Image (tube, rainbow, N blue to C red; front, side, top):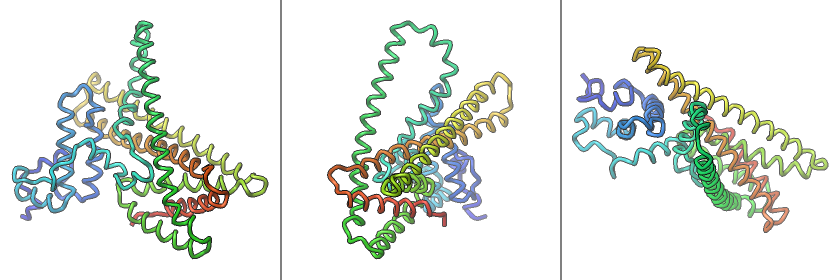
Length: 345
């Protein structure tokens, strides 16, 4: 029998709940699902969750590398089967599975761990209603002060993120804005952005992120360019359209969070209902899938919200001339159009 069909050990495959002949795509999907199911933030009462999360990360880091996977199949885990430079910290590795470092200059750092904690807290809010009514005024005041402090820190971090991303976007647009306006310069800039997009689409969630970024860039460019058309009615039309889009996205994200919350409640009730292990595993899998969807929807909303601010900053720069601002909007529209057209291979 081929060693790939009958590896000396299957522990890593079992950790990810995949067959030994699973494809790279199946392994990637399984990792995301299992990492969410066993993320320590999702299992605060389980002392083994952190170790399990770490093992799941190690299993994926080996099985997602064809050379390491072959060595693992042949020799098992004990014989130095690990990536060059050792295993990456599981939390950092988990974050990089949602967009990766390649998008840092465009969207900044996504706080996946924080988003997950907040999703868990939202899901638990309903359960704690009765407890809150017994809190003393001092406890309530302390909780409120902590909430305000966190909010202030978050706003500060966001402002710094918007400033950095705005500077990076201006630098990127310079390739277009500092060349003589012509069909040739627009075509050259389009080619540069197409090459970048083709590269970025292979990152985790690359295509979805490019579409989200592209939509925001195009909407903001149209809004700016529309201001100079027909007494600004074009800009007004795009503003109204954008508000409608934001509203529908917010509703969709809330629905996903509520769906996730109901899955957690079902899981909590599973013990009382006396469900079989198979039924409980099915519920866990559903919760993991919904968790993945909730993280993506939340991250997408965060990305689009930050980028709207970035575009506003870039297109209202008081140090730039009107011609430069218009050229920036046109360059932004080129990037947005290219990003939105990206398709899977």
